[in-house]
Length: 75
Image (cartoon, rainbow, N blue to C red; front, side):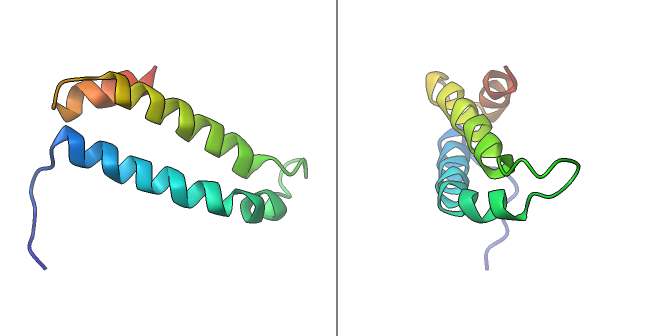
């Protein structure tokens, strides 16, 4: 496997989108695991909503700098 020391903003967005897609498929299982501190069963759903919001912000950043994408996502 080739070692990579840096990624482009586009690559970062694609990786984050892939992680969001995986979480979307797994959210019900994560919800079922939620028992602490209150068994409210929405941890996976809440995580997914946060990921979707972050991904939305990431796609609004038009330049290729990962630092700018991180900054947008932090909002």
